[in-house]
Length: 190
Image 1 (spheres, rainbow, N blue to C red):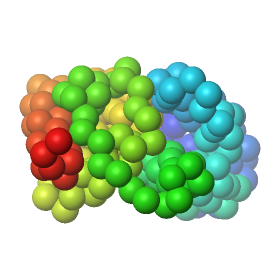
Image 2: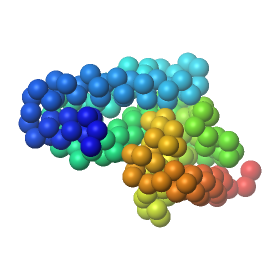
Image 3: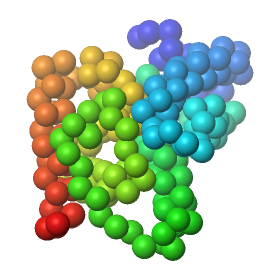
């Protein structure tokens, strides 16, 4: 077990010393991931990386963290928290701009690349398709969340999920194709 996992387990068991040690490590890691994610947002984005980290930390439990099994468990939860924050933010902005009417916007395959910037409509379309992918294949959906919403590399995501890098590559290719088809179907002709 690495130091991070040991600290997570000690903190989950109520060790206040471990909680004090882990906060700077966790905060720095989340800040780095949030900064990477926010760098891919369109210019004029109102949500800042620091705000994303703070909100994710609070949604993960703040100072009262649950007992994390390991680094993978923590980052899977962090990816989901960041995803939900970004989706909530996109919905809030869309509701204000468009009176709440949702319009489907097709995505091109490159939009599902790690470095692609997405507008709110595209992010909401991805979110809906990702929920359906999770029903179909939760492991592949989790890989997408780790890569897209926290900015982990394929190697890092494979490590977090406990799978080999070749398996992660196959899952990533499958998930991208599945999501692209689902979003195209939802967008309909046009």
